[in-house]
Length: 211
Image (cartoon, rainbow, N blue to C red; front, side, top):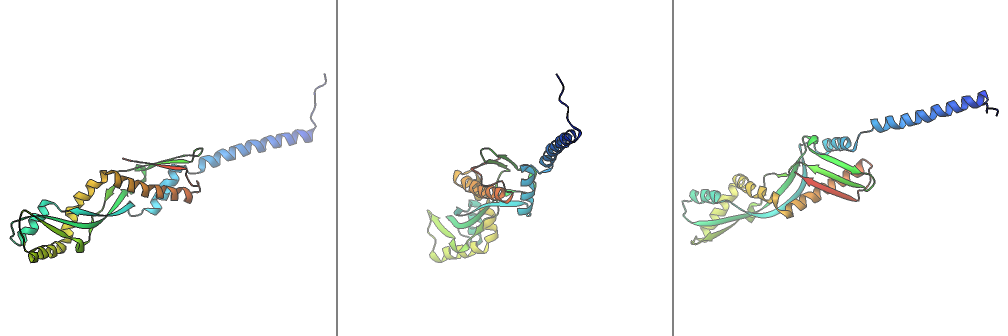
């Protein structure tokens, strides 16, 4: 049987097509390797949107009760012996540390379009006390109305100390389901914005895992 012989032009064309195919495969691989991973893109994204070392996840307004130590100090100013409860509305901002992007991790499933985000433990800033909402309740003692008014005024002047005192109460809410859900919702919004900004598309689901 005679062997099939390729003419020189056909052979050159075949070799050229083979070389182009190999070059295309290599180019695709190089581009895939040079393109930042989802994790790398998220680190860059986080550095751009959170230059202040923290990401604001949620802000809530709640009524908190001051500690017995604070009320005792307040009563001592007027030399009043009584048992009181002091409460006030305060805005609390919940944040997630973002100064070190390596503490965050994201994974993207391109098939299911599910993004999983793992973050550091959330924290909160000093409560912003609304001094006009301070309320004082007496316990087993009678205090004149004008004295309660004076106590309220003094507590308002002690706003900074009251904020410090309420911080401990605010931090306790970090473990409550309602607050954690609110923080997670804020982080999901951030995750969706990241997906859109980096052209991953809108995720079908965002899973949040906080340490």
